[in-house]
Image (cartoon, rainbow, N blue to C red; front, top):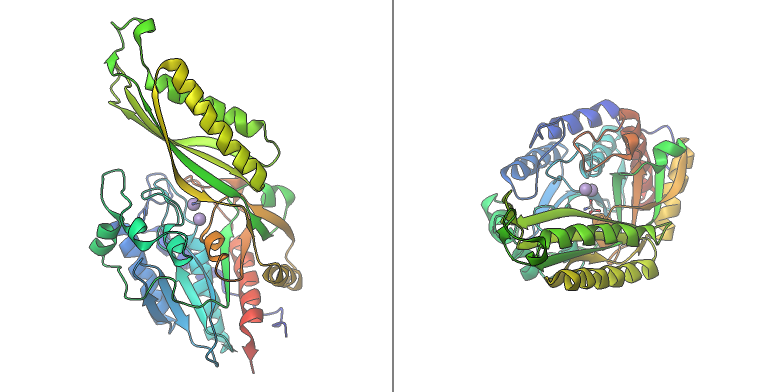
Length: 414
Ligand code: HGY
Ligand code: MN
Ligand code: MN
């Protein structure tokens, strides 16, 4: 039975919650720097927990710090989950991940306002370390939940300062007592901004996410020789920085050779000794390549690795390559995709099917439970930038669709 289309969330309350969360871990240009397991992340978690408590939810936390706030159902059934992540990039926006967590909370607040009861319990979720910016790989804790990574592997991950994930999680006081992955999920919904330009360009309010593209993160270490930038003859140089530059260009060329539907870039570069007048003797950088097509993704990985070794050989550099992140292209649950699409239609929101360009916790949870995503546009498609913006209307549209889709799957009683 579809819920009446006149039921809508409270847009002002949602927007106020988004703006209140944005005060925690502020960036330097209007966005956020609330990186995972920092004090700011801990503070954001406490605010979210207080809001969940005020909404009458029961909080559970697992040993990876994943937060699960439960609203009881009328029957002892596997819950319907909805959520995303509260951690941000170092120069992140106010909505990436946060809209999915606080939109889910707004759905529960609306259910409370209207006295709606459901057969299945409902769980609002905050997944730890979705971004992977501080501790690679991305979607780390949802990956442990889905059995992709072991908990030991995850807790041993180091940040750029050499701090351990497990120690940092304990330091902010968010090690829970639940076994990771023990929870049963009837269905999982993730509301997220598109982080690309398609919905806005097409004038659509809702993205019905049918698939997610796959990804490789390849960490390349080039080893040359530190030397004086002034007195070392060009022919004598073993320049790791030059190697990194040539490989970065090759990554771009490889992605362009697989158009449409492939992307590639180098986003993180660490140069040693990083002194203005020293030829870099070592460079460590991560290649990020993605495609919705498995074949293209696998081809690109091989081409990047061969190109890296060829450039290193030309310049007499040592070259090692370590995969530090990977997931194959994702197909979300067709039944739930239909539920999201019909909810958007019922509510009168313009919509289109879309493939997610970014990775999300939903990509891993899709391995262990029927999963789907709902997207709303973002201004200029900009994300992972402090200037990330959405409109209150887009936030409300996405959350209305989430409300109706979740109620349909959770089963309204009475
Ligand atoms: O990298 C991603 O796609 C996500 O933002 N972690
Ligand atoms: Mn995200
Ligand atoms: Mn992100």
